Image 1: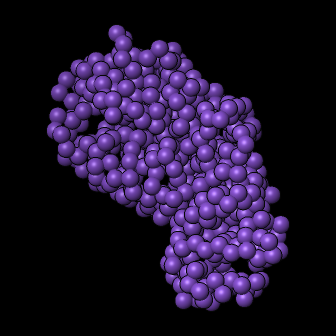
Image 2: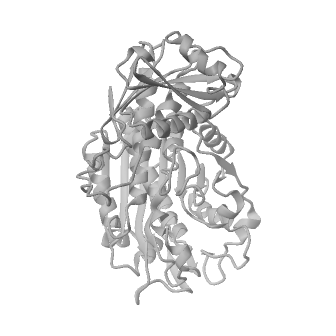
Length: 500
């Protein structure tokens, strides 16, 4: 049994769904296939014959068998079944059973479906069950990074137990899915916390508490004086206008081999806990959701925790740059020349292009710590939203093999990416007039790519990929997500680390 988000228990059984003590059983229906359920077959087939239940994808029908609810969920054609479809179906089922007051749900894994479908059902249910309610209905503040509010419906839509019924042993797949979904929900919680609550200091404390309960995870948190002492002039400049001290959060997980040829992956996250735009101040409409500008950092922190919980056989370094981008007499100004950790001089010509400044120093820091590949994740540009909307994250990389691996992991996890090109002509667009490079191109085009080319400068020849998640980090459109932070990247980065 695995304890997951907010007192929801996830377990597996080989008993039929209706033989469990669940108050609600969920049975899958495929297009043009007979019902697979052996129990109550006559009653369930009658529902199909009447047309009330159908195999069409997302179709729901409810009946009762021996005083218990049975929800029939259409999955469409069997050859179209995927983990993502399973997540969607599970979310719709949870939403319906929540309306009915269900507390224990049992999914009957469709015959012939593999472990990846079971993972999808678990993730879809737990992600759908998440609620951000720490400021509502007298809910008590969380006491730690793994706790939740204890209001009357446990913060999980009233769900207390989730059972997956399958003929084969799928405990490993179900346990893995529960761990990753829990980590994603924690990342959503971080994103949803307001900026007066989740300051850079608070994020550092959170990361330290998260690591303290995981022996395989070690943490280092450096303050503003320390990162300035290191020479992180770009990162320090972003924080210079705020009364809140920045934090450089480093998480280390060494779960792989210790031989000299062991490979190490670096994950780097932007965590601007609030972005006013600095002296390039945003409009009110553009500023209202800027608490989500730390979504990349949240994804990295929670991926590191998930890898530790999974005892993953991989060595991973997580680096998170946390700061506020605010306005004051000490804020960075357009025209300032900044010096990066690696000595690069940078013209700061747009205070609202601050994320690349934070990440540039963090990439150099990771390179000095030693890594075989670097992946950064950030809400970097509005340009990627114009290009890809809220369906895909932008992927830019200097390495085809790494890019192909990330794309494959994205397909498996349902956190989709679309590769955009890098080119020396784009790199020329970030060359500075008075310094080596600038954080704002004079040409108003290809903004997502030029932002990536800025980061490419610091990655150099190390295999590197950049994920621009500005369009997918909040207010997700999938049925298993709701308004607020999505936790995008936790599933993808975890899968990437496990596949590295």
